[in-house]
Length: 310
Image (cartoon, rainbow, N blue to C red; front, side, top):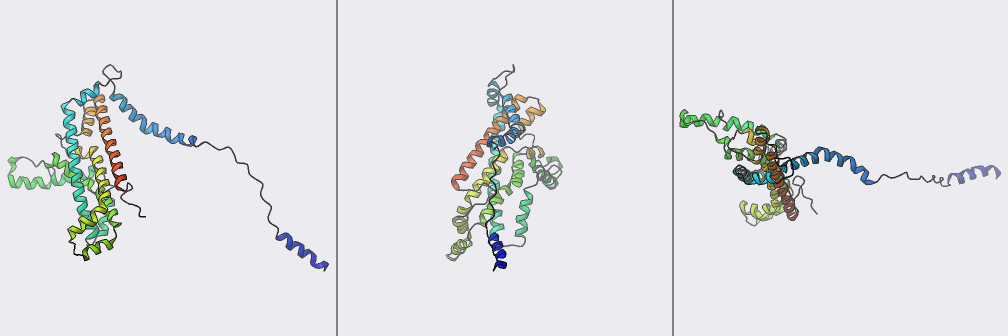
């Protein structure tokens, strides 16, 4: 019996729980506000300081002191009012064009089966990465003074009629902006259409509803938040668009960004440029806040057109 005792003792020792580790004293914790200092400082240096400089310069009078006179002079000038009217009209016209064209294309890609529909959706994602001046430069080969449309215009009217200058008019700028910004409406709409239950469409069709009725009663109510979100985004982008107006060569089309460019670069009037830039930024921020308010009320997504389902 004594020979079996050691194994029994070893088995008992093996079943004993391991000793608890010694408690580790936590080190000194760093306050959360300390971690916020580096990004805040970087943001202040990269963004807030330049913006503050622009706003400060806009309130600088002729004597170098604080003055609201620059705003009075700019707001009362015919040049500014004309530029503001042109900017709003072009932005509104481009937004309407993008909404109509984007809705039609989204309906075709999403609900009309045709070969290459998936490739068309992928091309839209690629198109969003193109710079605006590239699209405008491409349009010059069609509607520019040496483009295809100009040659047809000369053949029809004769050489004495002058060149075809459609692209350098406000309508040409609207065409270029619609061509470039339509995918910003199309992409959220395609994402919203992908969330629609096909059973609703089949039920509406089985009840005898025509395609136009299905679109109006079933599809559009589901896509309205995405349509509003895309339209508001395009409106803000069109208000601040500079490269398209510059590359179209529309010298008589003066928008607020073009007025900033002309005042600062061509005339070296930095105070006027800062005043117009501040007003333009204020309009953009106001539209962005309206966009956020509308999307929150309608339940529209702000992350590229995707909406969470319950």
